[in-house]
Length: 90
Ligand SMILES: [Zn+2]
Image (cartoon, rainbow, N blue to C red; front, side, top):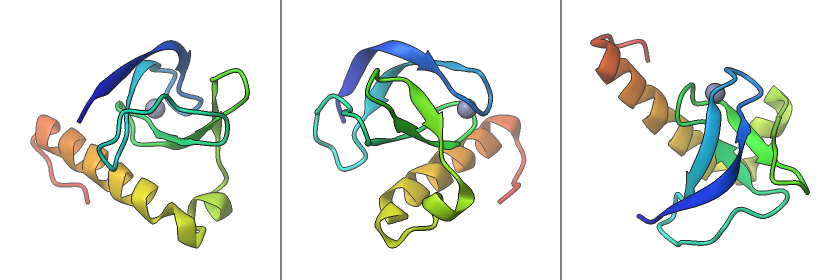
């Protein structure tokens, strides 16, 4: 999986500065407006706006049928967080 460096944006949920992205399906494209970004720090599902800034998504938006890959990425991030913390929260 290729990591793409970005100008960067803070996660609207946890405030962590996100200056990199990795495509969940393994490709190496740069995020475009409307693309989904899962925060590497907290697992929040966000969306890139036209200025490549991360914007929050509502719970309803996150549960759309086309969000399956984003939800799987969120689970992976949260699993990694739990492993780092030595806890099993999910
Ligand atoms: Zn976050």
